[in-house]
Image (cartoon, rainbow, N blue to C red; front, side):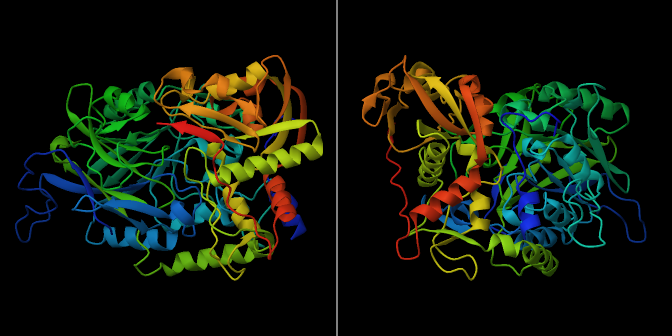
Length: 602
């Protein structure tokens, strides 16, 4: 952190608090006859020379976000399409189960490599986030992860902290968490091919890595989305430059080829949106409205044919699709949802004669990380160790709820609750505060009624609150004109948010209509925007509470970076905690908000 305080700073809570205390498969296959000699067979008895073709198993996942324990509510479930056209949900996730599934998948596969598509850490639950995500790196080491790209959340605490996670060493402020034991860092390389140091113009970490086994060589190039500065606090990306994903991948694919590596997989922390939320949806199926959309489509269409498969992430969606490369040939593009709920199993058939992948025989399938398999005991021990350290903080009750408070929907009940909490805290700072706005991406989980531990049903613990809001943003107050306020709402559905709208969660009293049948800014019905029943006056001044990420213009809300009369308060989780304690008790729990402030027309 710079010596001069940033007005919209993000701060870690760690120092303050520590000082105080196999499923149905989705198959996307490039259809062609497999060579008869595929696999490490094709050898006569007594001869050790391998056959021409060797199947390489690529296991992959993405967007773990430090979810070591099974995620709660909808964040811990996946949707599965049934043969009769209906769907069902399956409980999924948790590294105790992910480890078992991956280890079982590797059985009998001598040529197996495990890769990830970024956001392994950041926006993590308390068990990991409280300790600067060291527990997650330890878990990934035990999972035998071979390589991962960086994601945007790897930069939540800045490049220096990312470097520490890679190389090891105790935290510069909080020190070592286990007495006499230094954090050793990641056993696997983080790849950051398109993240450059502004001074040296060189990647801050390795741009690529080559997996080798018995003459088989597969290169991995890792990139994060070019727009990472738009979705991370300015402090986290200070001194860094993020380059175009396609140009970067194509550059290093050429470099790998010069080194004799002709089989290449791109790990890209950018993704797409399949037409169905079901993990086993066939996104190669024909028909209007089918398939996949989003940024990854253009990226996949332009990445050099030298790359044989794309492992992607960021959108938290599940897919195993084929998208044509620039030469018109189909190429596999995969994503395994998020939070360790799925993993992808891809077969790459390596041609020992050419050193390349026989792309026509690439096949991928997403598998559910079910909780019906035995838990991996080493992961249970790891979770127990870190939970013991976190317990004095995490088990503290901070409120009571009468039912699940969901994070699902254009406007979600948990979004309303957080916005109301920030409005109430804003009024404490300045009684003239009129409303609060909350970014949906800052809400990482629901609050569930069922007890997670021994706290009892309906009790909200600090750990649960931390899982919902893990970023340690401050609550900031700024002044905006009514015209600016309406412009902020329009920025939800225009500019960088035009394709995938980011609908802000709003405090009580603010209402408007969002007409999704229209296009562009017209989707926000301007004359419907009202505060406490009165139309917004374009010339009037409104005092608005947001978190520091939004106050810095994050998520494409550039107008929110233009406010005046700045006042910086405490962190956002403290505001939620204060609101819950003031408005709920064991005998009078808070009810889930109705989520009826935005009228959505579809």
